[in-house]
Image (cartoon, rainbow, N blue to C red; front, side):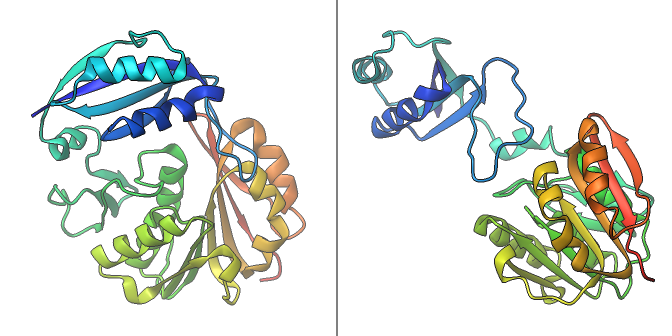
Length: 294
């Protein structure tokens, strides 16, 4: 079966109204994309930002009268009858196989792999995180996640207690558990992240050692390792709280910050931690520091 793809160029102010219109007219899905190569690295807390120039794409079943949809959209929104970018016919395909070309087994350090479920582990004797793209951020492809996975892969985590703060897909929590952590608290502000984490923990047979909860409900003693792959602003604002969750002699791992944000984040943690170690990848930085008082 083929599909119709209807594409519009608009701005952040009108994107939601256009998307609502396409949904009301029967779109199977509506997606947003950047139409001007504008990065959005760190939105304010609680904000859902959009690019200044937005591409709104509606996907419709082949039987749809796409000309009528375009005309109705124009009438409702004041857009031109012919959408910017045009109407495109998409041939159906095996979408599961299609995304596999972009998400393949990845190695982190000498013994840790992230392996999609459609692939056999390249090294069956290694620690293999079985994981597919899903509801929440974290597959290992982004530099910030990769930096955290590489650090975990080189640590003696056997028997350790770990907090994955901002767990997303749960990839770091699952990785820590597979690497021998005694128990892991995986927390996030997004309930969907907890669903994804529980699913991935079950897929990797570590559900018994991973405890999921919203950040506001976290009750845990100070841990040996706290990993927070979030953003610079919350990392700065949460410095005292995160520091209190790491035992003396424990490690904190901070990621999700850009190179020019390193100094301000480092400074926020110096009252509680030794001079941090820095690792860069692309535009991103990982900070690792030892808690005072061992």
